[in-house]
Length: 253
Image (cartoon, rainbow, N blue to C red; front, side, top):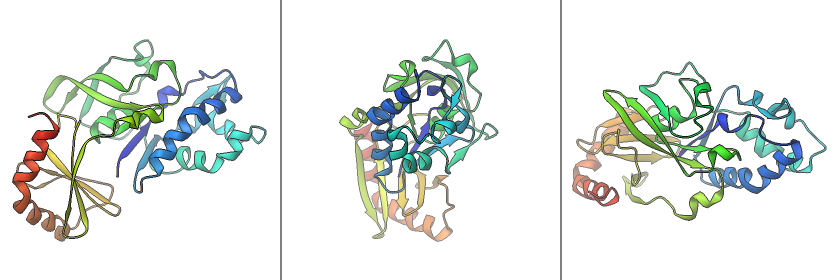
């Protein structure tokens, strides 16, 4: 289970016309979304006002998806509606400890960014950005300078997906099975302002536990019961050394 955040700033009227937008969707964006949704449990978050973003010539995304004359739009209408107009959403009132002070990309436009945006969400939740085709978002890594809790002026890197070649080199992950039902993961390329940790997945449940003591660090969308947390803590006691070794190997320690 992974979290992805649609880049609201990569859709701001850059396409020549609706046909151009449809062509780019077919070539790059739709294959990315199909790859993401192919894995059960993956979530694509979007700003709750994304529907109003300009595609071209003052035409909004919502208006584009109502088009019937564009075969590409009609053919993928259900998939696009699922991604763009259904939960999960986020909004600018959400609170986060991360304050991005400098964007080392899209610098001419970044002064327009809201304080809470897709990049803040991706950093806070160890997610990836999905960008529409835009010349300012053709780099696989986006760099920002941020204050994270008590850590000031830290450079943080965010994965940016704009085509399926992102997966040419899969992220390294070490996996275990706990109690015959939980999948345990230690992942490479984790954001280093979080403490060393491991992920636990079980159906629609996801959480992050600290490597130092095996305690719950962060819940997912569904709250974990006390008994579930206890099962992971007990498993951790028997596997602590192996988890720490895997973290060290994957992070070059």
